Image (tube, rainbow, N blue to C red; front, side, top):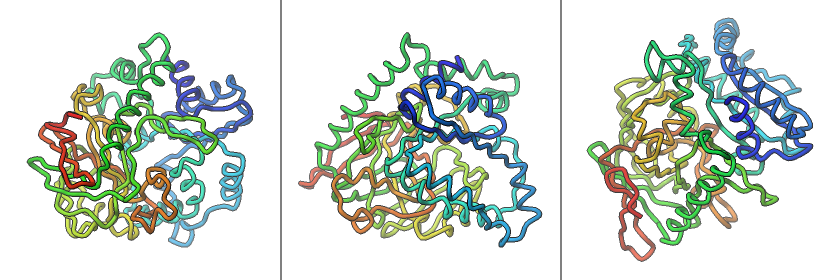
Length: 397
């Protein structure tokens, strides 16, 4: 099953080409998956595979023993690698570091924020190219024993979680690659319906939300696969259920509360209520994670503005499982979500200046799940008419 999963990620996730190089990021607990992906890449005639392993235990030691000047250091070879990734158009696969985060390794909050900001600023060129779909990239998650126990309970094992994920990943189909292409086509058909409406504004209403968000003039909904400059298709998330677009960063008005836990700077937040005025978070409350949210919102100017609005039907297989996955990838595809931070310029079709038009700019991009079974989302069209898109968490369009 792991081999089949790796082949799916290589063939559909990043659509790896013969002679193309690949960068894989994982944590220590998912190195086995990174290795299997690398083996698949070489079977598909990759030129070179580089595996980078993140480790919060080592990071905790660095934060404890270095000052801010030392934490801001990044070796020149990393900049050279970024340059090579961009010029040679390497593919990128991110294995979500769930296993590492679930270790609950204490990280110095202030130093961790400084380190994250410095590191993201250092690597902004390659990250910006991925956000703009100039390079193929794919985010996945891989079952481990620790993650299985988190999702299914203390008696669960890795195999139990695989049983849950196999149908979600379409690995139970005779040809998973073909199945994902077919699913992508259906999602693309749905985005065309949304884009033909000429939507200018979204209104979120539920027992915990009353929020309006305006879209940019050229905002288009996207979903499933994305398109590279040469016309090739790749799938940024496996699995994926979201149809997303880029809002006007200055438009959000009202309030909304998160419906699932969200990890921010390696700390868990729960039931965060965000109040917006003129597009900016003007105040917030949190049942859990108030301090880390304060640090996040002060990270840079963009983290207090929206960069993404994503629509997700609560009847999809991930949501219907009834599970909280403690995974940004899975939980965001089980629920409508809003992202604070960088916006997707790829959603602003034909815009000559996305940032001037209202696309948000930030070093961060974190999705906050807000969907629920009582969520209603209404769209305002260019002619001022309103049309429901979701009622009780389900698509009606």
